[in-house]
Length: 526
Image 1: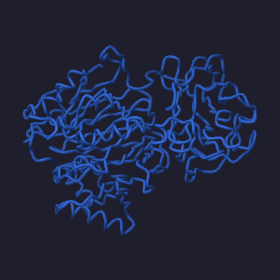
Image 2: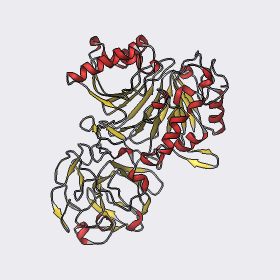
Image 3: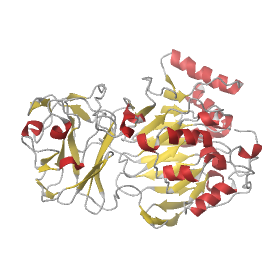
């Protein structure tokens, strides 16, 4: 991990580092350096005319003006270890090639250039595909939450952002081929714009984790694709509270709003959000230090449009929360806002919902523990994925304490949709009731970010938390010492972390050792 300073900032660029003798990188694949412009152009994940094991295929398209040889390139998915292309497969300039699971011509229209066999199995439910160079650099990746039976998905424009198979960058094929499925293997794409994705037909042989995947639900797409897929995540310096702004391709998602209404208003001014649109707001739970600042979003003088708002809607007797909810409900009744319950975030009964941002990044909202005791343990979990989800993910879970963390574990969120993340936003402002060795085993973060005030009555960040991170050699950043923390994930280079001041691994004036790590040191919980 290398650290270099720039004027007014410290910038951390993630590279390979050693922890416990295991070499870790920013993702399953690195993207440093130039890579050939080869894209996943068409996907048949759920054939109907033939069985999956005979009819699955992937079409690749080269945008290069020279031939590209795919020998030793690898193709991986969420369900398996993937395959390596074991011989020369040359893609002509601006040409296509077809990789198929089986040699049956009825399943591919006879167009397969390479048969990869059982090492790659495409999920009918939530899954992704990534292609890598022999040295591990990522060339392209796409993900989906369900696959229509018997219909391939094909790109409209090969050079447009296309990380989500259900987005407007893709079309549903209409031409018949082979035994009767719809697609254009080895031929120019045709079809109709993506509409609502039909419910997936599950494959009986899929792993058990797939059947519980929270991201299978239809996504909420925030608009047409944008060419810039850069992802920005800001942990805003709001004092003793949380506020996280996520931006990608012109889309904005805001998680919480901090405790200080005027301070949050000044941040809205500085960020240029007045008169703009916040596509989605997620309130993790009903504590003042998370919701108070959100009231500024609804000041009429700010003229800020909010398209979706997610919270668990639990009863909570606080006049300021009632005021915020009144503003939300009034807009919802006028048809200006969609108000969703995090216990049913996609309003389909499924445990999770995926928001697809215009640059291809995704925000997954996961149902909280329905029996969680108190607001903290009813905190919703949120997973942020870059357009190439093999490179960067982030896990955020409000003020979730040990009870909620144990529920995430028991519910298998670590397997579906997955809890591993490049960055962990520490639960509960660094309290040791919001972190544990098991939690770190589930998330395996390269960096931990904490949001809190330098002077607080809770003893945050607890010494046990910092000792645990230090023992795992996980660097941390904290808003009380570093100011706003900005994580940037460009399309084709490593992610970076920039801070307003200070350095990694700082201690604060209020840090102390908690008397216990299950009860927040007997202080009132916020």
